[in-house]
Length: 68
Image 1 (cartoon, rainbow, N blue to C red):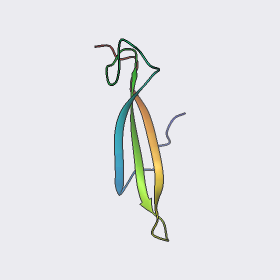
Image 2: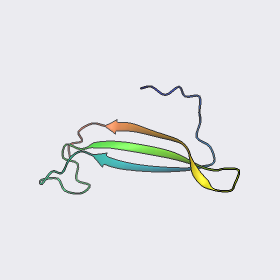
Image 3: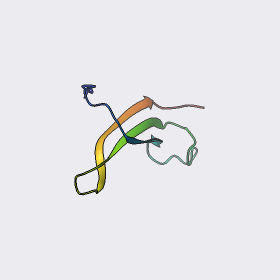
């Protein structure tokens, strides 16, 4: 699925990076092993009632199977 790039994130945007892949005994925690790096951006918006909620969220695979 490709982004249309029509909806820019604005206001309060939170970013986080994380690694995905199953458990690897030889590469625990943030050790790379065969894990893939993903970045996530989430836009926080306030609705008409003043409640904070998620506007748009994007995730992108940065690197596949990092080896260090």
